[in-house]
Image 1 (cartoon, rainbow, N blue to C red):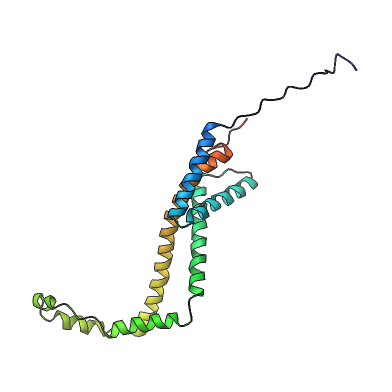
Image 2: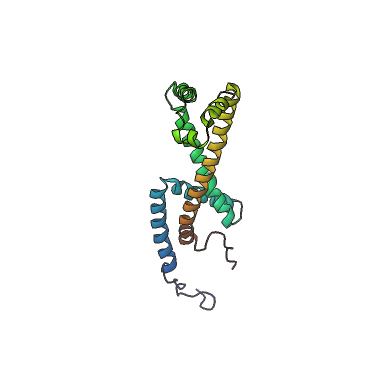
Length: 193
């Protein structure tokens, strides 16, 4: 053994790193916020958190970092996909004849409208007769097509609004968890050493 080039001393062992208190607090707060948000949104916040995690994994695989905007979009998109799936499953599992029953109810309510209040004729004589005459002029085919269109547009609008709200709540609850796991906030640039 050559004493000039080799040493019998072991290399220094680095001291074990203590967890950063800020990350621990952020993790506890993030878990609490996510559980509270999940209870409030019927599990939708968990779907948003999963969407952010998937987007972060895809960005990491591509050698990029996840921006704040793209993480929010991932959270909302995950909730949209989940809501479309739940809506489709609900519509597909409806009992046979449900649409026929809805159509029958709509037709009977249009054929027998509730009477106008008595005060309307006192204020504007003949208003009830004019309203009844206007009601009978509509086309059945146009009403059916408009009803389908209104149902589709209304469903898309409702899913978008609910997904925007639930995705944002889930995304906000996910931010402290992202900091606790990675040591940096979602959307911040990674430190270069």
